[in-house]
Amino acid sequence: MISRPPRPRERGIPDATVARLPVYLRALQALQDRGTATVSSEDLAGAAGVNSAKLRKDLSHLGSYGTRGVGYEVEYLVYQISRELGLTQDWSVAIVGIGNLGRALANYGGFGTRGFRIAALLDADPEVVGRTVASLDVRHIDNLEDVVRDKGVSIGVIATPAGSAQGVAGRFVEAGVSSILNFAPVVLNVPDGVDVRKVDLSIELQILAFHAQRRADGDGRGAERAGLEVT
Amino acid sequence: MISRPPRPRERGIPDATVARLPVYLRALQALQDRGTATVSSEDLAGAAGVNSAKLRKDLSHLGSYGTRGVGYEVEYLVYQISRELGLTQDWSVAIVGIGNLGRALANYGGFGTRGFRIAALLDADPEVVGRTVASLDVRHIDNLEDVVRDKGVSIGVIATPAGSAQGVAGRFVEAGVSSILNFAPVVLNVPDGVDVRKVDLSIELQILAFHAQRRADGDGRGAERAGLEVT
DNA sequence: CCCACTTTGTGCGTGCTTTCACAAGCGCGT
DNA sequence: ACGCGCTTGTGAAAGCACGCACAAAGTGGG
Ligand SMILES: NC(=O)c1ccc[n+]([C@@H]2O[C@H](COP(=O)([O-])OP(=O)(O)OC[C@H]3O[C@@H](n4cnc5c(N)ncnc54)[C@H](O)[C@@H]3O)[C@@H](O)[C@H]2O)c1
Ligand SMILES: NC(=O)c1ccc[n+]([C@@H]2O[C@H](COP(=O)([O-])OP(=O)(O)OC[C@H]3O[C@@H](n4cnc5c(N)ncnc54)[C@H](O)[C@@H]3O)[C@@H](O)[C@H]2O)c1
Image (cartoon, rainbow over all chains, first blue to last red):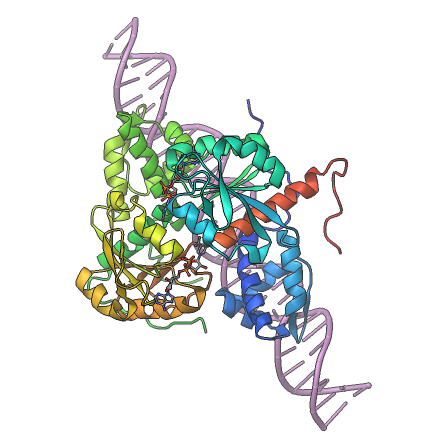
């Protein structure tokens, strides 16, 4: 008997907004690198590929950090968004499943730049365990609990085959990790309070295929669409 | 308020539904492998991790393929969803940028099983061009147009560094590819009629961090609410 | 000091999504 | 043949999300 009251939760920032903040942040940092001091919602929205009213509304959820007639101060906004997203602290990440994908992730340098530190790599294959990948020793999956504790892991990445993913997720949860990023093509079952996000290549391709097919079906004879926006 | 162009709801399957169909499909194929002949919306919804009413409404967009009192015939539903998603035909995929990620994608066997065939790999680095990855020769990016034409590529995957992504996207579009899957952390600018989907690791991690921080704020020992925001 | 101009913050209408709730449909046992 | 229990398909309601349009708020020139 699970009591499921809707969400009397004091809803802070809408999920749709949270999902866009990282995009804004990236655009802002590009501006910052270019030495821009302030930016209007119109320009920032252009860089982020969204409607400017949407951007302003999104930012308004963080507070009023803009100046009418001027725009937003880039540096300050970077700080505010970073703080809101929790990027002012470091997050320790463990990757389980050091195969094709796991290795690519481990070798990817783009994480560290945002406060995410890959703290550990784990695998079950004796062939892989003990090897060094991206300057880290691959540990055996049996050490998961120890590693999580010792390294203070708070985000778990699952890059194992589908069959092993649920088991690994369970161990992560058991060990106290309540944020999981899952690359395996399965629906993970986790208790309330654990946050799972999935990245699923195959689904993305299928969605593309759907739209491509629809275009092909309907547009039999070159239906042209005029106009492109987004400057 | 007078005469609005009647909703062009012809082929209208809601986007949200389209995004879930692949999940249902996968769950159904698992059932099929297990020899299950029929399944109720309740059970299938459980396997797919969604609400059963939502699942029924989603399926109702494809037509009425269920039997009241019984459920859905697994095999038939697999076929209907596959057809709707356009998986009954083959899709030719080209991957550009054969680095860490591109190689992982190329070596990933899970695509072929769904009608996606990796037809070509392209890169700009002379060091990489000419090598064989996953039984395919890596071609030089200059051949993109030829490859697209010769192999009938209809889906392009971009796994290059951010700086090169827009350029590659433009060439894909120019060559007639109107479905693009982008792994580079940039907002791509493409004309109307071109479908871009992005997979962005860094964004996923940042969203996880946001929720993790929120949990930590609220869950704090002793402090129920640790002061929200600064008004 | 005032005015013309710029840009933010947001009220509001519109349309999409989710969820509930239940009548209608189907199979089975009697 | 009939009713009972199960399950679908779908109105209707509630909740979100988006984007327009505009007042409010700020800047700078004269
Ligand atoms: N490679 C890709 O591009 C790609 C694309 C889409 C999805 N995926 C998914 O990502 C996952 C990984 O893909 P991959 O290509 O890297 O597979 P892989 O087979 O190359 O690697 C999987 C790794 O997980 C390890 N492993 C297996 N069971 C384990 C367990 N219980 N605990 C710890 N480690 C375990 C294996 O030893 C292996 O090293 C799969 O679920 C796959 O479907 C991969
Ligand atoms: N590796 C990961 O796990 C990971 C994770 C998240 C995002 N990404 C993103 O995916 C992209 C690829 O990552 P990676 O780790 O494979 O990088 P990488 O540097 O290993 O590989 C990039 C490849 O692209 C090639 N390339 C560069 N410019 C090109 C051009 N104009 N045309 C064709 N090929 C070109 C390079 O020669 C190289 O082989 C990057 O944008 C990265 O930010 C990667």
